[in-house]
Image (cartoon, rainbow, N blue to C red):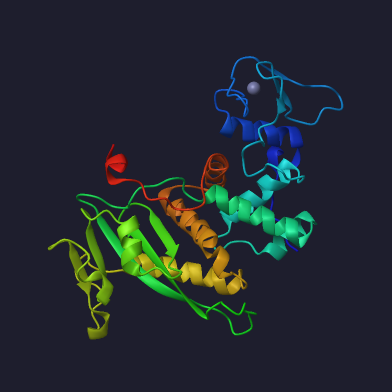
Length: 305
Ligand SMILES: [Zn+2]
């Protein structure tokens, strides 16, 4: 297997890996995860001490930067975590669990766990509705069809629906619709002060206040009218689907939101925005701490505050 070049010290040396992660998660120095102490903290540097071990002299508890992050409760070396994170950030269509397994020479279970934890780091935290006054938001849905070769659970469907919203010049946000309707997802994720552009699908028609919605009618062969189009999302869906078919053949419904967060993350930190692979991995790493996987609606007042 071709091994990507991962020569930086934090991919090779455990102490350097800790220093790298600490620089991201503790920019102002160590913070005790138990009591929040920041000053009375010592480094334990004994010969047999594991790397990164600190002790809080306020609550007397030992800790490392791994606590309270995606790296917690894992025996995998931190430098290997960073390697996986880098590869997932550098691969446009994602990395298969099998490939992580071969690379780390670990169990399938560990590879799967690491992959999903990294997706958790990539997922946005609590975020409010997308768009707003003066912003244009594109919305479109796609169906994710499973390969006939994929074994399905009895309750699983062959087709599942995904809705994506993208603020022009801003971020994309995708969600698995499960049993929700497009409208209920829009209520949760779209700021109704935005200008919405969509295709001619029925569910968008009466959703927005009068004058706030424009659409192109694909059935009449109309795909672009001025800036009214859904091409941004068409492009995004095409990358997502190539990843789905080529890499994640067994993306299950239960985890679809996590994969969507992964593809959203790469889209929102794409090279075109001037972000390189290393910077993208760095952004993912800052999300290793204090992020929730679920998208949470924020009260509009709170979102504007
Ligand atoms: Zn403490």
